[in-house]
Length: 217
Image (cartoon, rainbow, N blue to C red; front, side, top):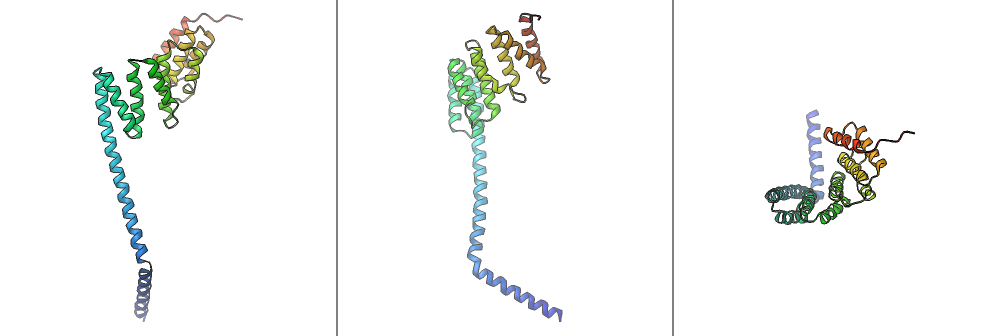
């Protein structure tokens, strides 16, 4: 008897499924097609992006080789082309390299290129800080301490990737400006940061020795 009921239930389910299929078959087929198309499109996009990245990597290597061969004009042009056309990650690296190549012929122009990168909010904070530090390094001999402070102070905060270099540049700039108070301030920050590299700590101690003794009260 139970087998008869099972057969009846099976027939009912089959009829229900047939009605659902007859009513919604077009939608089901369209949905399946859309899913397949979406997956295929995503896979195609991933392939194209990987291909672009590989091509950009090869072009970046060739431009770097030009730089190593002291062909700075050609290297700058190659990096500029990458900065305009490459995927986002390579674009930022290429912009930094364009500025580095320009520094060999025009430090002021290179500093402006670095400034453009540091002001670009689409660029990551570490890359912005790197651009700040490199621009400041180019301008150390000609820029005032207040200008250097404005440029570099955002990169000196605890945890910033290039804080050690930024602090050293500010200490040097203050020392060049005969601002001993500011120089000591940055040298103290360097000394009190347990993560300060040993080589930088040694340079800071040497600079500290050049400062006049603190007047006793």
